[in-house]
Length: 188
Image (cartoon, rainbow, N blue to C red; front, side, top):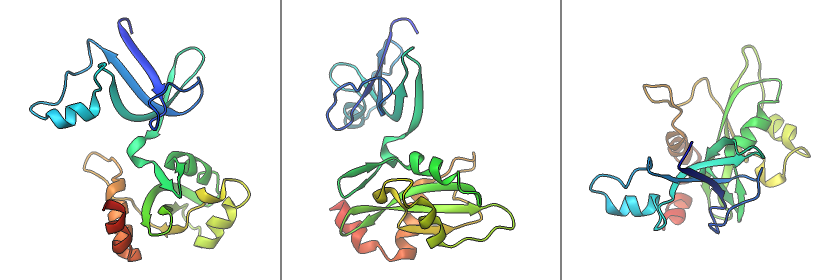
């Protein structure tokens, strides 16, 4: 769009990344909001001094300047200093012949900060074990991306409009896996 700027930025450094590399989508133009109504702190976090809106969306930009949204920055899992993008793990797990749907979230861990957890919906008539899912991953994705926890479900927590609520999945996991102590350390 005319009079609009978009760039993909490394969220850790604020530096623009090369084309094709994933980063956070930033934009600025006359169409970008000035800020949140009566919320100066939230506005300052979302829009920097140069007017760039930090969207929170992870994206890549191709050679023609087209952007592809690849996930949400807040969903990123940091395990032992390694950045793990849930969508990347989900896309790989979709290639498992028994998996109908999958959602990946980070759960707190005392040793690594966070661990990977996959919520898996199997195809009708299929059965699988957590170890089978992890074995499928071994040697095909980085070891730190392999889900430590696998939960088989028939549905995901969703809003009334059909949006998956990953924060609720995380809350349920913390409760079911007894990770409250690790969650307290992570937020301290």
